[in-house]
Length: 49
Figure 1: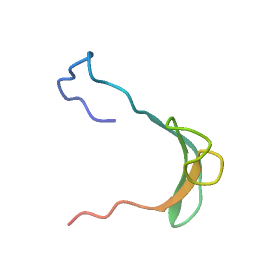
Figure 2 (figure 1 turned 90 degrees about the vertical axis):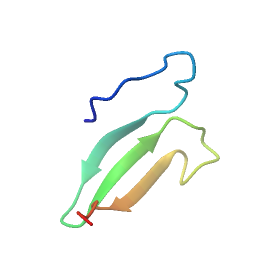
Figure 3 (figure 1 turned 180 degrees about the vertical axis):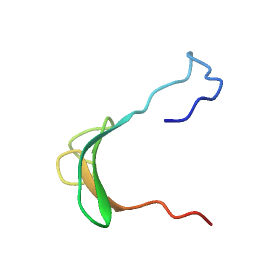
Figure 4 (figure 1 turned 135 degrees about the horizontal axis):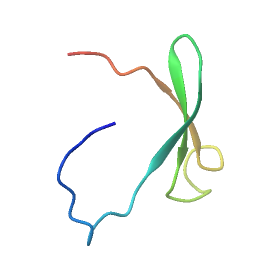
């Protein structure tokens, strides 16, 4: 969870972690059912770069 200043007038996007496995997060996206597979995306773990 990031703790950064937010301009509440332009906040329009959210993602919810709904599951995970050994290599990925399963995310629910707030955009619409047209994004991903009915709003759901499987994303590889973030890596420290």
